[in-house]
Amino acid sequence: MKNKKKEEIVKWVLVGLVALSMLAVTAIPAYAQQNITVSIGDISLRPQESATIPINITKDVAQEVSGARIDLTYDPSVVEVTAVGGSDFDIFFYDISDGIVSIKVNMVGFQAGTSLTTPIKFADVTIKAIGYHPGDFTDLNLEIVELTMATGSPIYPREVSNGSVSIITPETINETEYRKMIPQPVDVDKIYYKFTAVDEEWAAKWANEILYVQVKTKYSIAMYLDRAGYVTSVDFERWGFPTTEIPYDLAIRSLDKLDP
Image (cartoon, rainbow, N blue to C red; front, side, top):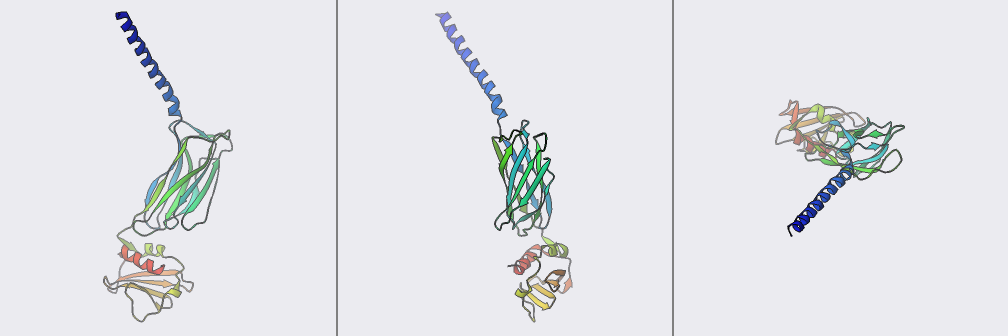
């Protein structure tokens, strides 16, 4: 009887050891099958500021990649892409599609010879902040159109890690930075001659000068234009005296009235 119980115990111990060994064996290929990831990060920019951010292809274990076709989508009212390059791939090219709500950058990279091995820098993307309102934000959404090995076989499983751009705004702004934010050429047909300044409205003072006044703070912005409507200079004043900076909120109010 005792021997029978011992045999039962030994049998269950062996079953348990076999189960554990099977888990250990299956754990290795499961790890090897984790996703290859295409990613771009999150950044914050001041209005008119530019930064370069990489798109990377990574995996925890080495993965050979021969070619990739990846799209990047963003809100053109917040940022614009000014340059794309710096890829690890031998051959790389891109184009930017037109759009109002969103714009897509179509990028292609591939090897002329030996495949690359992760981690791989797919591209450096230079982004300029166009938005200037507090809280302006855009996602940087990636889409993997194609990701292949040297044999031409697609690489799976795969995923993207999207990024974003947040616009951060200062408390004050100087004349140089303000001028960069002005939409040009200025549509002077929308601005009328006034004998006196109008509170928080643009008014034409002379043929080449328009004026914006905020009565409660005593700030004023004088903008000088050429005949085509392009800005030649900007002057800030408070209480009738020159000042180097104005509140950022005032700058936004004036620009919104300039380009409604």
